[in-house]
Every structure is written in C-alpha cells, then in structure tokens.
Image (cartoon, rainbow, N blue to C red):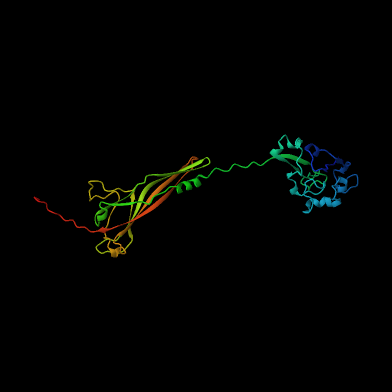
Length: 332
C-alpha cells in the first residue's frame, strides 16, 4: 500500500516576521509516495532529506553542512538559521527577536510595547509515524508570544525577631545602687543586715520598620548578691567560697519600728568580721548585686519572644562585732 505525504517548508529570510506570516507556506516540494509497509518511495530517494540548496538555505550554509550545523557549537545560534538543519535541543526555547515588530503588529497581542517584548521560538517536528524521532529536517514552525516586563517583587516585611533585638538593645538596664542597714556604718556580725537596691520600674522600647512594630518590655525579677565573706562557719576563720544570696524583687530598707530580730525580706547575717588580713588590706567585704530582668517582646504581627538582661553594681561593707551592754535604769 502506498501513502502520499505532502511535506511543506517554511523559509524565513527577513529579520522580522509576524505571527500571521510565520504560518505561511513559502515553498513546497513535490509529493512523495511512500510505501507504508517498506518505507520505500516511488521517486527512488533513499530518505526524505532535502539539502540546503533545495530548501532555500540562507547564504553561507550549503549542502550537508547545513544539516549538521545545529549540533555544531560553532554553528548558527539563531533558532531559524538554516532551515532543514539538525536542531540543538537547547534552541527550542523563547528567544528575543533581533528587532521588535512595529507597534501595531499582531505579535503584540494588543499589548503596549512599553509593557514588555515579543519573543520567538522554533521547535522541531517529528517525522510522520516516528514518535520520539530526531528533529524534522523539513522545517520548523515559528511561534511568537508577548512577554510582559518583569515586575520587581515587593521586599519581604521586616523580620520581627530582628526588630526585637534592636528594641532590646535600647533597653538601658542601670547598674543597681546598693542599700544596706539598719545602719550602713555599723553593720555587725550575728545580726541581720537588710539588703536592697533602687527600683527603676519597668523598662520599655519600641522599634518600627515599615508596617511591622515590636515593643520590648523588661521587668526586674530577682537580685543575686555576692557578700564577700566565705561560707565557712565555726570559731576559726578560714578562706572558702564566697557567700551568695538571691532575693525576689529589689528588697526593702527596714521600716520604722522594725523588729531587729526578725529576718528581713532580703538580708544576710554576716558571720565574719571584715578584718584587713581577711580582705586584702581594705578592711571591708567586697559586695556585688546583680539585678536580673525578664524581657518579653511582642510584634503587631503576632510574633512574640522572651529573653533576659542583667546589670551589676558593686560596693563594700565594713562589718564589725558589737557587744550589747545592759544598763540598769534608776528605779529598775
């Protein structure tokens, strides 16, 4: 059984062509009668190959060289160069045309030329009855399409965590000012020493960038004390780890009429006098108070977080030993 197949060639000779022009058949070859069973044709040709001369090959590419230039890295890089050449798979993609078409050309698809550009592509066609075969050597259709200009993506919103770090950096946690009593100049062993620091109150800072706002708030939670004297007890002094104490809140000074025997909200009972041989010649115990702050932050986007801050103040206490002398009053 013989089947007649009509092969058409599309030839492009100008720098620009319109969408309507690209579908026109500019050149045809005579029908070939192909035997559907044996693949033989009635004209005695061994293949369906048409060389460059037969297909109107552009000047400068002739004969079989045009058929192989598509796979030669040094060959033409124009998707339409060399009709009939073997097409490199990478060429079947959208490519800027050498010259944009006139304003009213149908290739613009009704779009404003300032809003984009027209591109083309030329992909191979498989020979009849040969699925997956190499590129068709009898020509390739040209497709044009309008591509809008790339629109710059809006920058992402600021990261709340980054703004939170900035807001926390603006929180000025002051070094605590240390208070001690009942009488700062007469602190004694074996009696309660009341301890406290100034309370600066909650601290807050807000940072805003774009539409994102973050507020960080710090609240003092505890105070850690280093009391200078060693933790050793007994009748014989010996160096050792420094006594420490952690109090909730800031502590308070003794109120009027306080009970000197009662343990204060934040206080320490010194066991050792601050003699010069125990204190490196100063005669005073080195004191440090570290305020610990809980920091929370929240953004208007719903993102929240927490961290801590602290600050340390330093002082020194002269701790001595005092004896209680009972004096009998007249009539007693």
